[in-house]
Length: 376
Image (cartoon, one colour):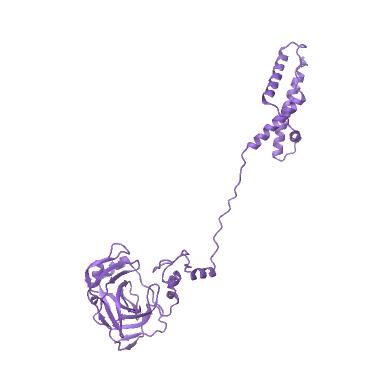
């Protein structure tokens, strides 16, 4: 079976098309090889071609030439053999077309968005605070208590990180709470039994106001109530409660205690401690409970008068020693007068206070060899 030989007029066009396709493939492969570090021969050929100064060819002109070539090929196929004139693509036009393809590939590569990789490194942890820095912060009034923020004075509490063990570190003014040598309360024992001068009470019915200050229930009184001890006169300023009793007598702790705070003309303090044991209802305590404010830090005035004589036990013997305030700033040089006979309050009266403050008593402090006198 014989085959028809190819027409001589079609051979130049077919060769041109093959050359054009080969050049285009070489350009594409060469561009890919340049991007990926390849060394293929056609990639090198595309790279070499890209080094030549490309000619600027209008798009419409190229289209017209390609359309003319296709039309010539169609005419050659339909025309009788030997009459059609061969249509060919010159090497210059092929080079122009290759340069144009290279320019298009480079333009696409330049237009592609760059991908930026951000390396997120972990956040650095804060450095540990050295003991020297903590001392410096404390010297400038900053807290250095583990578990508490630094940079400002802190509200003291009876429990937790801001409890009694840390009072001296919360504020420079509270330093005595940790460093003082005559702190209160103490366990009163082994007192020297002597004939103490009786306390001269000058109490009379007075208007009063009740406030829950966040640490205890406190009663503020108008002027007019005084005591005299060893020739010194003190005026009653306020009294407040602790549960359980801060003072202990030979190791015994009572249900509650009332601290009656007095001040003399020079600002020296004398505190009378009235121990409260469970028993009969206390009439004066009930007057205070009747005037409890509904919110903290709001002072509630009572419509009745308060007679402080009702707070005192029948027998007025007392223990005495020099100590301090039992709350910050723990100021020392306070004269303590602890009544030996406790007063009583009902279990219900005790439960009213426990709803507000289940425990607001500072732990006992070391007596540090202080002299304690016990009145007979």
